[in-house]
Every structure is written in C-alpha cells, then in structure tokens.
Image (cartoon, rainbow, N blue to C red):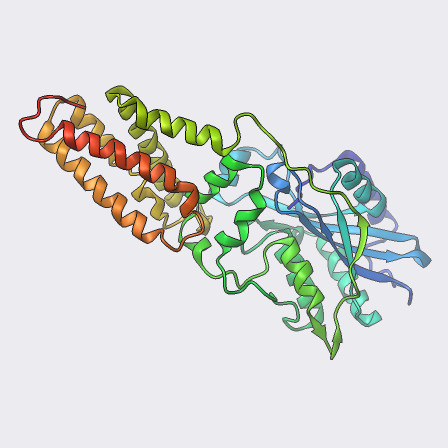
Amino acid sequence: MKNVIFKKTLFCFLLLLSFIGFSQNLPLSKDAKVSVLTCGLGNESYSFFGHTAIRIADPANNIDVVYNYGTFDFRTPNFVAKFAKGDLQYFATAHSYGDFINDYTYEKRSVFEQELLIAPELKQKLFDKLNATIFSDDRYYTYKFIDKNCTSMVVDVINSTLNENVIVKKGETDITYRSILFPYFNGHFYEQLGTSIIFGTKVDQLGTKIFLPFELKNSLDKTTFQNRPLVSKSKTLLLFEKETPTSWWNNVYTYLFILAFVVLAHNKIVDKIYLFILSLIGIFFVVVGFYSFHQELAMNYNVLLFSPLLLILIFLSILKNKRWTYRFAVLHILFLIVYTLFMINKAHLLIVSPMILTSGFVLVRVVIRNKKRIPIII
C-alpha cells in the first residue's frame, strides 16, 4: 500500500479546496464519475502490495480528485516505536488526479480504474462522506496490517455508502493470509523470510477478508449491486511491467551459504554464535508479541525454532555444565521436532527448512559433545 509523506503542495491544495467550500456538499453533475483505482506493486517495502484509492471526476465542476487512505508521516515522533507497537496513526488525504498519476508514472507502477456503476445520489453520498472525512479528525485511523489499511478503508466507505456489505471477497477464501502474501515478495528474499518468521497464528487463518489492493480489484469484477455489475470493465490508465530487483546479498544463495558455513565449519564458536543469534531473534519475537497491538505478531509459534531458552543453553555450556547443557540441547531438539511437525502444512515451511536442518545439526553436535564421559565442551 502506498504511503506518501504529507507534501507542501498537497497541503496547499487542501487549503484551496477548503477555501472554495469543497467540503460543503458541493453538488456533483449528472456526468460525475466515481471509480476505484488499483495501483501496481513497487519495490519499496511500503509498496510491495500495491495501493487502493478512490477517484471522483466531474468535468462540469472542474473536479478530478483522488482520495487516499494510505498516508502516514515519517516525521511522527517515535515513528518506529509507534509502527512496531501498532498505534501509528494513518490518515486520509486528497490529491489532484494529475499529481497522483504523475507520481505513479515516475515510479513506473501500473494504475487500473474501475468505475462504480451506482446512482447519482449514491455518488453524491460517497463524495460527501469522503470530504467530511478529509476535513475532520475522522481522517485519522490506527493502521492494522490485515484489518484496517488503505484497501479495507475503501471497502468500508463504499459499503457504508451502499448501506450494505456489497463488496466482499471473491475467490481465494480457502487459503491462508500467509499463503496470499507469499508471492508478493518476489525479488525480496530476506523481507519474505522476515515476514514469514515474525508473523504468528493470525496470518495462518483463512484469508476471508479483502486486505490487498488486487484482491479488491478482482472481487469488484465479480460483484453485483441491485442485480447489475457494481463496476465497469477495468480500464488501464498506466501500464508498466514490474521490474524484479536483483541483489548480490538479498537472495536465497547468501542465506544457504551462511547456513552451509555453520553446518560445515563444525566449530564450537560458530555454533555458539548461531544459537546466540537465534535466541536474540526469539527474545525479540516474545517482546514484540507482548508489546505490539498488531495481532499478526501475537502467538508466534516460530519461537520453537528461535527459542529464547537457547541463551540458557549457551550460558550452561560456558559454565561447562555438561549435564544441563546436554539436557537443554535435547529439549531444543524436541522443540525442533514439534515445530517441524506443526509446519507441515504452512506456507513458509520451505523457506525455513534450511534453518531447521542447520539447527538440527548444531544441536545434535551439542548433544554429542556433552554426553556423559565425553570431556569436550561445546
């Protein structure tokens, strides 16, 4: 979802709209058009999934405005902490269509338009709702990755205008949110790995809600209202082929190389460093799970692989306590077995499998080194 820093030009534009009474229920002409814009995927983290916006075009009143629910301000105090905690305030803004389309032309991202085939009074109602939101505190909302974002907010405001849940998800309701997200990270390996292991059980639920722009686009094509299609045939406003980035480090090969080095080094120090890194990641998952309001980060079973208790294992090995080092190593092998069984039907099994195998090799080595009557310590 695209997120744009509040620009000075946009601020001036909104002041102009306010000055001319744009928010005061300006009547639209009979030729006014209301449409949903779906924007293509980008290679920045905020643009991996595309973007959704609403366009109001009324040539008779010299209006061509795009409403966007995906804005946040990087200058927000404690921005990173607020984003991690899940109480970062996003807000709705309005852009001139010309500025909007120029931005996506510059970023080389496709834009598709679906006109809403609704009665003039409903267009007016939606127009008034959007303006009332833009010029009030209602423009702010607390972002939630699945439940409340630039796409879901568009769905909500249109359904509210139509006085019923007309727009619901069509297709892919029998696969999980995690499975739906996975293909969007093509060319961004470590981002794919990171989201795979930081998300908990919520993203393993069936993806029954519309939360991504192209899910909405596809669902609109299959949606009817009052016994007729809700939208016209999709129109391509901009068309660019997404460029998949290449990187010497952000790929599966560096990932496999690092893990292969850990396995083949067969070195006590390397094993300790590997287990220490896993434990720190596990501690981060536990802390974020309790600290954050993002439900996607709660109940993270990946801590069975990234166990915080590995710190105790390392501490015991440093103290040369062979008996308890052995026991904790066996315990973590059991964790690994349970984790592997639990992962059998999960979308991210393949991407974490190399780490499962590496952890297995390392832990078995720890067990062998600390068996009774074996003097070698990890």
